[in-house]
Figure 1 (cartoon, rainbow, N blue to C red):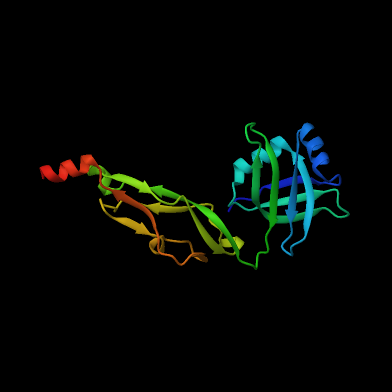
Figure 2 (figure 1 turned 180 degrees about the vertical axis):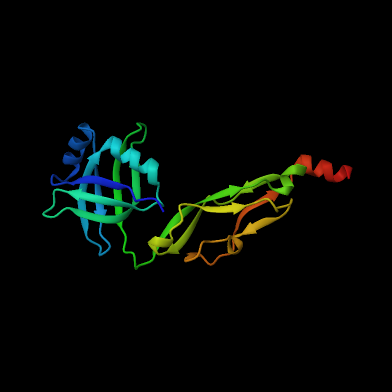
Length: 197
């Protein structure tokens, strides 16, 4: 396992909408760090550093946050919890970092990655993705960055249900609904091929 990235931020002392606007004018982004015990610490960081972090870890990769400016520097294992962009400028406006407790489970959405070529698409069917995320519950140490699903065996008219999605050890689905996550649907081309056969 590779060493966790360390993300350095500063404690934010000037609060309020006006203060946040002034921060953004300086190229800084206001945010909040939520401790595992439920406390929150206002923080700030430069725009470029935050964008680099978001690209590197997304919402599912753990990293260490280091908060400078407190009486003692705070270093904690964390996740990006929210990341808000400006409506039309490529500029982050606010972010939330969640500190995790290694002994407590967390609930979050993890991307689904579909791999392989479905059998049904080779005879004119179309792969239809119904869900791009799955809500899971797990302890931080077992958190996958994504869940890979092999669609190779799917034929036309078949789908893969949530209950059959292979999950890593220590990970379980949040919802008990057995919904379809991906399937192969019939198209005109596949119907024509079937008629010819």
